[in-house]
Length: 169
Image 1 (cartoon, rainbow, N blue to C red):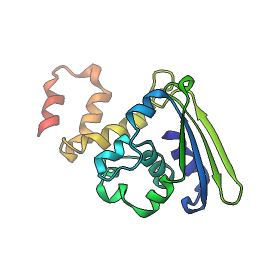
Image 2 (image 1 turned 90 degrees about the vertical axis):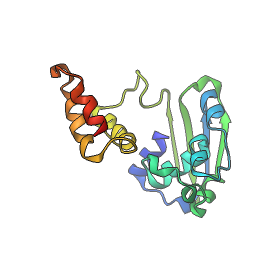
Image 3 (image 1 turned 30 degrees about the horizontal axis):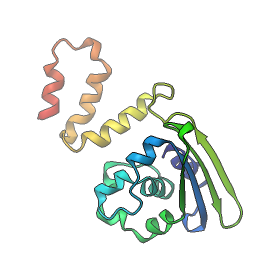
Image 4 (image 1 turned 45 degrees about the horizontal axis):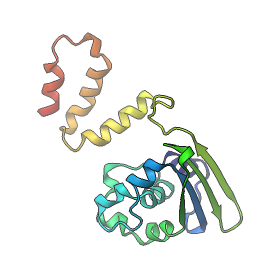
């Protein structure tokens, strides 16, 4: 839902002023994220409607996004109900979106390949942010930045245990 995060960052639209969101999605997203009304936090991972509403309302989606409270947040539920999806097999892993605001303003954009695809790679900073977000679940917080520094200089590491030990302690 990177496009929605970008629209949020650039235009700061008030989600209560959204009239309608149209998403054309490919077969993978329409199959893997087809749960329209998630109730539990973990179900949000499988809902293009939830993911899109959070991306536009809050920006960055992290592991902390997937809580029971968040999927049942009345503002996000109201925004989800304004999202209409259609299957566009030609899009494959991309997305085409149109946001219509109540005042008539429209935001339209498309993405042929998702961020993280070899044709649209993540920057090192984006990789670090994703890593930190996931690593906090299993690696001591004090070691995360140390691990990132080790990974930056991986070619200079003589003993892989330097990394392995930081992953556990």
